[in-house]
Amino acid sequence: MAIPAWATVTLVLGTGIIVASAALLAGQLQLWHARHEREAADRAERQEKGAAVVAPVLSLLNDSEPQRLTATPGTQTLTL
Image (cartoon, rainbow, N blue to C red; front, side, top):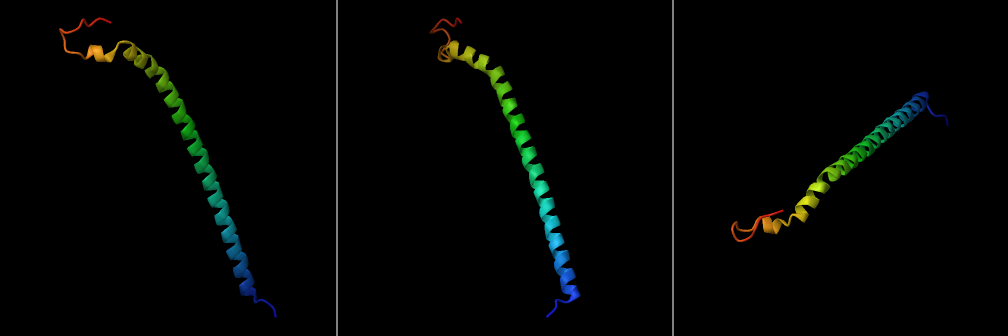
Protein backbone atom coordinates (compact mmCIF):
# COMPACT_ATOMS: atom_id res chain seq x y z
CA MET A 1 0.00 0.00 0.00
CA ALA A 2 1.68 3.19 -1.19
CA ILE A 3 1.11 6.66 0.17
CA PRO A 4 -0.42 8.99 -2.45
CA ALA A 5 1.84 11.75 -3.76
CA TRP A 6 -0.42 14.51 -2.42
CA ALA A 7 -0.12 13.07 1.09
CA THR A 8 3.66 13.00 0.89
CA VAL A 9 3.73 16.60 -0.36
CA THR A 10 1.34 17.67 2.39
CA LEU A 11 3.44 15.98 5.09
CA VAL A 12 6.67 17.49 3.79
CA LEU A 13 5.20 20.99 3.50
CA GLY A 14 3.52 20.74 6.90
CA THR A 15 6.73 19.59 8.53
CA GLY A 16 8.65 22.39 6.82
CA ILE A 17 6.17 24.98 8.06
CA ILE A 18 6.39 23.64 11.60
CA VAL A 19 10.21 23.65 11.54
CA ALA A 20 10.34 27.18 10.09
CA SER A 21 7.86 28.43 12.68
CA ALA A 22 9.84 26.85 15.50
CA ALA A 23 13.07 28.43 14.21
CA LEU A 24 11.46 31.88 13.99
CA LEU A 25 9.97 31.53 17.46
CA ALA A 26 13.33 30.44 18.90
CA GLY A 27 15.01 33.44 17.30
CA GLN A 28 12.41 35.83 18.70
CA LEU A 29 12.74 34.30 22.17
CA GLN A 30 16.51 34.64 22.03
CA LEU A 31 16.25 38.30 21.04
CA TRP A 32 13.69 38.95 23.77
CA HIS A 33 15.89 37.37 26.44
CA ALA A 34 18.97 39.28 25.23
CA ARG A 35 17.04 42.58 25.33
CA HIS A 36 15.65 41.73 28.78
CA GLU A 37 19.16 41.02 30.11
CA ARG A 38 20.50 44.29 28.66
CA GLU A 39 17.64 46.25 30.22
CA ALA A 40 18.23 44.56 33.59
CA ALA A 41 21.94 45.40 33.43
CA ASP A 42 21.14 49.02 32.51
CA ARG A 43 18.62 49.23 35.35
CA ALA A 44 21.17 47.87 37.84
CA GLU A 45 23.76 50.37 36.63
CA ARG A 46 21.30 53.27 37.03
CA GLN A 47 20.44 52.07 40.54
CA GLU A 48 24.12 51.95 41.49
CA LYS A 49 24.71 55.45 40.14
CA GLY A 50 21.64 56.73 41.95
CA ALA A 51 22.75 55.12 45.19
CA ALA A 52 26.18 56.73 44.84
CA VAL A 53 24.51 60.15 44.49
CA VAL A 54 21.92 59.70 47.24
CA ALA A 55 24.14 58.02 49.85
CA PRO A 56 26.01 61.21 50.89
CA VAL A 57 22.72 63.12 51.17
CA LEU A 58 21.20 60.39 53.32
CA SER A 59 24.30 60.34 55.47
CA LEU A 60 24.11 64.12 55.93
CA LEU A 61 20.43 63.92 56.86
CA ASN A 62 21.13 61.10 59.30
CA ASP A 63 23.98 63.02 60.93
CA SER A 64 21.93 66.23 61.20
CA GLU A 65 19.39 64.66 63.56
CA PRO A 66 16.15 65.28 61.64
CA GLN A 67 14.01 65.03 64.79
CA ARG A 68 15.82 68.01 66.28
CA LEU A 69 15.53 70.02 63.04
CA THR A 70 11.76 69.51 62.91
CA ALA A 71 11.19 70.38 66.57
CA THR A 72 9.14 73.43 67.50
CA PRO A 73 11.27 76.56 66.96
CA GLY A 74 12.32 78.33 70.10
CA THR A 75 12.42 75.21 72.29
CA GLN A 76 15.84 74.10 71.07
CA THR A 77 18.86 75.64 69.43
CA LEU A 78 18.85 74.70 65.73
CA THR A 79 22.53 74.36 64.97
CA LEU A 80 24.18 71.86 62.74
